[in-house]
Image (cartoon, rainbow, N blue to C red; front, side, top):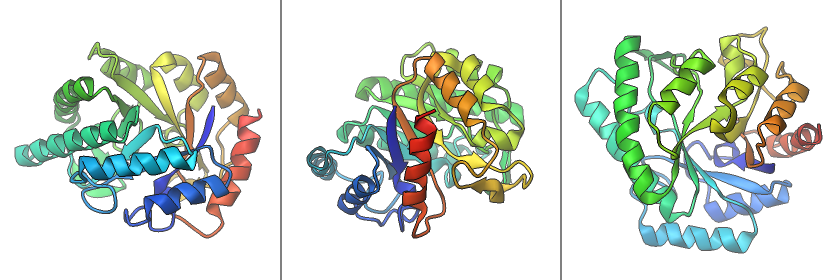
Length: 279
């Protein structure tokens, strides 16, 4: 497995203003083999970044020796593909298509995608009826998969606090419905705990559909967004989780997504990940 860190875990990473060259150097110095880049509607890497700039970033990556195989898109939180507003849905699909193109220009294999919002503490003003959200999520993903096929990038659909896919069976069936090799699961180990779920069982049930992993930890006793914590400080059953990943033959990126940044978080996380990956 490839020990990686999210660009969002860097200082000013969430704002999208941390220079990519610095992020590559910081990741390497902290002991990570890989870095996950992140894309927004503005910042150093955006949905309007040119092909030439993406190729320039790829050259930096190749020269750094750091693996960059994935791109994370948090665009859904600002432009929801399951919105009640048709114009917002259209805008969301269009900017995600643009993000997929930039993922391809960056030579990333997978783009993380949040498939829509029903209800979330991250966006408390958004509430969409579940059946409508599910159908809109399906329509959006279908269109995005057409682009993903063309640019040869996996659409990594994530389990996240968005009010969709409380069950691994529902999540499995949603992904399988597309019959596309580019429809894959980006599984976040820590996110499931807030839904009172058991990560090893999700991994067993989702199996080889899981093509990418996010690493977080969570304290069940807190039970809200403040429950996310340092790795090994929460309630993730790491021994069972790593065993489940090994059982499905998972050997790709393990990307820690530690938010918000603090001066010691990259180093603490690096040490914890070494312990986790040694299980």
